[in-house]
Image 1 (cartoon, chains in turn orange, brown):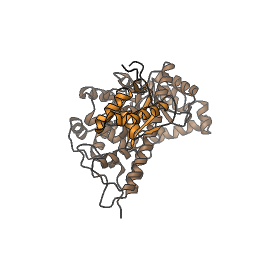
Image 2: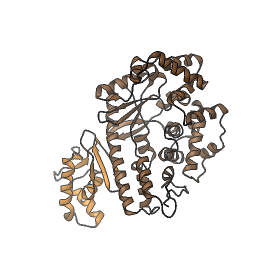
Image 3: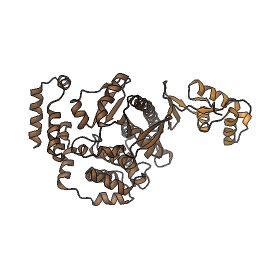
Image 4: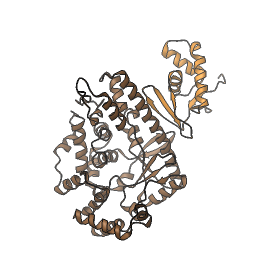
Length: 93
Length: 362
């Protein structure tokens, strides 16, 4: 245990894939958000909840990079998704 | 001269077993393809076909379709958010619901829900609770799109009540699946039995069972206002080919509804328009089915370009016992005062109109 928070997609959200990524909308309010690039990759990875380290590990393995190379990008993407109320800390973890 | 595509045939794109060539000729009219795909919700199917190498889209056409599909998906999300809210609000008033069409079909009957856009929210509510449902949504900020004939009609004879959300999105509160004769024969109890759960935004919603869903798709494709449009026929094809329905239960249900002609027509139309080559037990039955003469006449009248909502409702007389004919006649002839005011008519004028239509029909 590192004490690092685990993240998950918020439940009260609807989304659809488009040719350019995914469009996400919180049911509680707000506007539709289009996700592409790193945000999309992190969103997809968070189908299974995980810490920044875990998500970075999954994505790094997928693209043949090291965890260190992608960690900062993952962290920034998670913070951005959290600020849009699309992901939240998984307090059950 | 560029050739315009048949919009309905675009709906065959990506369907295994079809031989359709949806974009005709060496120089198709791409602007017509974009217009049709955008209008009929088929942009996702066209783009998927292009991704799979079945279509070679010019770059500008591709870009226009990407935008069209993106817009359609944003609308779908706004509608799904509304759907969840509507179900929760109705649940708070003790009104049970079943999800119809759009969201349920996209999530339960398509391998990729993003290929099945929709334009409104459709919810089934119990016949005797439709006024509670309307009042609940009005308190929540919705309004009726138009004034109905009255509570007596809504409860027993109406197909649905259309509401508008505060954002102007459409909510159809259904009591049954069709108007007139064919709607009157639908066993509403069948719509409530054995629902299928689906999770939307962490909320557990209930949809119709697979047999009722297939029949609803057939009723919509055959009796709906936009007949032989691509997406309703694609729904029928998806469910007929890949649905989890049970043949015995489907046969029993369609018999109870006396809806064999509706199902057979929908399946035949889907097979013909989408050029499906597979022969299934259902498609074989549909192609050899011969309807009773009165049912064939009734369907022809229902689908006639001259048919009106009123004439379709009057057609229910043919299949109702006398006691119910009297009730339907009263509901049609004696609407609420608000209805008359909204039409700028008086009761005698309305009675004369109903009588004229009834006599013309007879």
